[in-house]
Image (cartoon, rainbow, N blue to C red; front, side, top):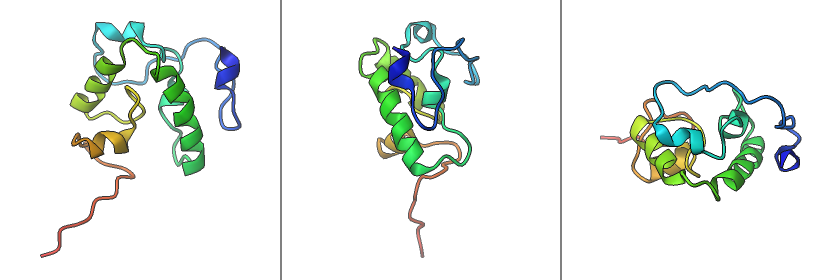
Length: 114
């Protein structure tokens, strides 16, 4: 399984699981998630290049596709205004679905001019 998660921008993901970087409480579904221990795929580095983000999110998508708790994960991110790749959605996807972020970074919003 770790061979799938190797790439130019990320080291192999066969090491010890990472500590959670999510603030707040996750519901009972979280321990069933396919992504547990692979936070680097779901949360980008500071100043991540667009090409690297696309590659990272394609790998994250491969874990989300078969995840039994994808819907719960997506709803959690939408309701809690989370950053990162949750439930097979990134920030832009959630924004387009009508779920805004607290401080949208990288989301292009056309200002209203009077």
